[in-house]
Image 1 (cartoon, one colour):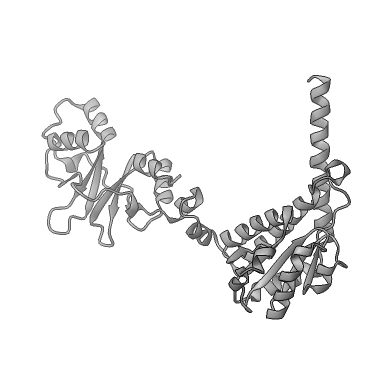
Image 2 (cartoon, rainbow, N blue to C red):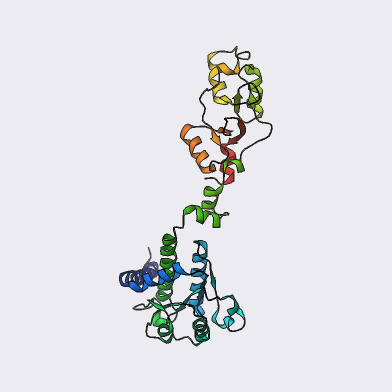
Length: 325
């Protein structure tokens, strides 16, 4: 690496090391005030109102998004807009989190005064516990830093990182207190990868019309045609109204049969089928069906109802396309 490049990398490392040290100091100093803040948040009947100005306002928006996506309704409220009608979103059942490095931003105090008038608990994330904001808050969480990473403290760097980390600590601790589960997260993120894995069911992907089924007495010549037309898997069902699953014939079964004899077209399907095939149900998670197929080298599964009647077929390719993995 060229000397000039090394100097740039070293500077970047110093910034990251300084911010990492600031977060570690935050963790080392976390105390009973944090526990009190969690108790207030957990006991709230309303929403979490999160506010700040400037860079603190940007961090406040991110913290609000994290709370909301982890099961705690939250919203960002700009302190200036709050004094021009937006205060109407605040109720007495809410809790407020207010961010300010100095704790002395003039724009905050109109909002803080209104929150106190409504009896809304205020959790302050500030670098100065003895600031005007700190003195008017219900709980003060120390978000101070020894120094900023930016030369001459031209821009908040370590302080915004610490504030964001502290917001994450509040949100994640609160979700654990509330018993928020992976399934709850998925329900709030249906368009995400985890959401699809935890919400998508076999019923959402399976084929239900014109199913490839034969009874055990039918000749393999009919099965060969179905295997070619229906993507390599045929469900064999018992005769009668119930049509319960008796077995499965796959393209692999046909290949092995052809290796043994060239006179197979009139052999009954029941003599070729796998009699204890793997199967699934319509309410099974699609991701679980994929896991079953991958463990056993299967490309498709019959889908059964409670009486073992074949109600569908689900193919690995379709599951992969659906985002089940």
